[in-house]
Amino acid sequence: MSKLSMTDFEVEIPANWTDQGMVTLTMPSTDKKVRPNIILTKERLAQPTDLNAYFEKIKKSVQSRGIESFKILEEKDVSLDGVPAKMMVCTWDLAAMKKMMGNQSGNLDHIQAGQMVQQIQVSCIRNDAAINLTASFPADQFQLYTRPFQNFIKGFKFLG
Image 1: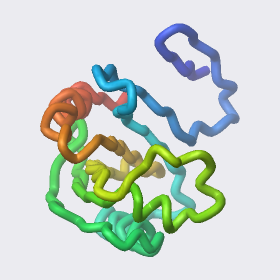
Image 2: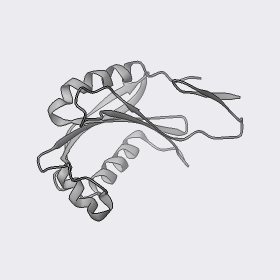
Image 3: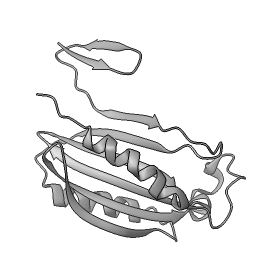
Image 4: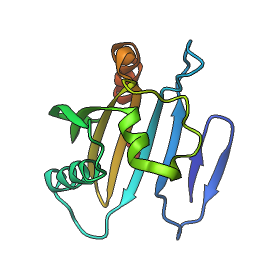
């Protein structure tokens, strides 16, 4: 039987259950308006998929959201615990995203034009699962927050 362990709890997973989903980790910030985060996603793939094809699908999905100011700044091959991975750094104006979301955006009155976000995503495929690590930070603080994210990636270990 497998176990899922978090910071303050652990739960046994029945053998016939499948794990997939998302965990959000929030990093400390000195700015009360900034909640830098890392989202770890595990997606079970229905069929074998090539990493390059999977990554292109992710890029197209992000681009198809229609955020006017969206730009890919960098793409490169990396690894996650020795497993080949792809990395993408992109940026956009939060106001453009707010505009795109329209009435469904909730209370986002604090978002002003020119508030740039920068995001780094690392994706890999291992066995029948795609693993995505996505971190979003204010663009003007990207260098500050990307260092802990890089350390997080270095500490990532696959089990079994």
